[in-house]
Every structure is written in structure tokens, then in C-alpha cells.
Length: 285
Image (tube, rainbow, N blue to C red; front, side, top):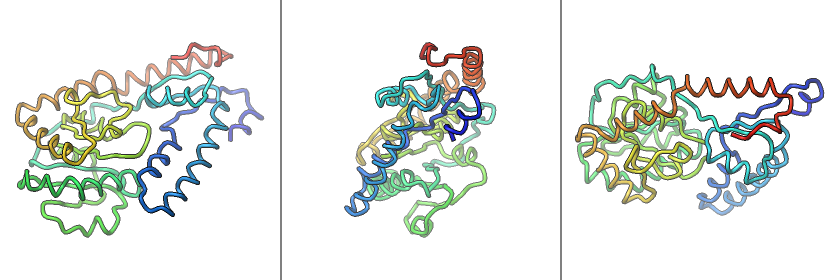
């Protein structure tokens, strides 16, 4: 619609980029084993990349969700004004209650390939080891559009909830949350939600990408099945040690992802764009 807008209006056009779309599909393609599907996904990815790059400078101002994505857009050739403005949370909605049981949570839309791919990896590679090391801990799966092969799982101590009415209450019920992602782009809001509830998050490097968290400081990070398992065992020990990691996670979200503070900065930038008729000459933030 950009050409139509420019034809009928002098309005400044801003692009709110939730991710670098073709990067998601590059990563999905890379992780696909079935060769015909891999070729087909690669073909679609190249078409998508071509479209994104051709339109990269067709808007006046870019607002990415992370500094990491902003750097990538510039590397790809974006030349106009830009800033990073992450997704924020209304922390009034995230009042942690008493954890009800020593379980592990996973939540995410399971019609989104990166979520399903990560969950299947966890079930196949991590859970068989982890269930032996923590035999009394249950794994709880929630997400809309859960496929039948996940719904019909018959695995000890694995409970599939499907789509839950209240994601915050679901996350809050268990002390540990896993985010096993190997493809995707942008930032994972569910990690912020877990941190806002003082949960201990165990994530892959890619899952934590763009948020600015550090391993052992605000969350735990691992990319191999055995180390991912080790980190979950560590997570329960840390939880029982006054949950210091979860408390640091909450403080991190409070300091950097309060939506009121972020909204003020974004509105100030929009006002600056309105007041300045030449957005390309603005100082890039």
C-alpha cells in the first residue's frame, strides 16, 4: 500500500518491524531435514528476501523491536531514519502468585512452525533424560491449534493443556519455563512474561535473542540437549535457593520493558517526526 499512500498523501510512513521475516524462514529451511521440503522452503525464502530487500527503503522511518534487528536492517542496506523500540509489558498485569507445583511450562502457538519444532526437539531430546533426573516434575504444554500428535501424547508426567484461557495464570503456576527455539526472528514476548512473573527461564540462544538477557544473570541459556537438561536441573535448585535468578529477571523487565516508559519514548519520536519534515535527516537513534 505504500505507493498508494504516497500518491495521495505527504504523510511520513513508518514501518514497525516485528522481525526480519525472511530470516525466520532461512532458519526454518536450515533446520529442515526432508530434502524436497528443504528445497521448496529455500525457494520461498529467496522470493521473500528479494521482496523485503526491494522494499527496504520505501518507508521513511523504521522502528524495530530490538537493537539486534536494527543492526541487521542496516547491514541489509536500510538507509533512512530508525530506532529500536522493544515490546513492553504492563507490569500491573503480572503479579506473581504462589507457585502451585514444581512443574515446567511451555506455552506458544503450535501452528507456528518454530514453536512446534522446538517443542518436538524438547520432547524427543531433552525430556527422556530430564524425566529420569527429575522423576517427580511434570511438563505442562499449552498453546492454540495444538496438532493431534501432540494432543494424543501418552508420555509419563507430560500434560497437554491445549489453548488455555489465561496465559499469565498458566505461566505463573510453575516455577520453570522453557523456550526451546531454533528458528524465528524478532523477540519472544513470552520470555518477558515469564520474567515479569519471576520465573526461571531456560532458553536456547536464539530464543533469548534480541532481549539483552545474560546466561546465569537473568535467565539460563543452552543449545544442546544435555546442557539444556542440566540447566533445568539447575533452575529448580536456584528456585529453591530463594529464587534469586527469578527475582533478577523481574528487576530486568521492570528496568527495561515497562510499557509506559517505552510508550513515552515512542510517542516523543513520532512527535519529532511530525515536527521535522525531512525524516531522512534525523539523527538515527
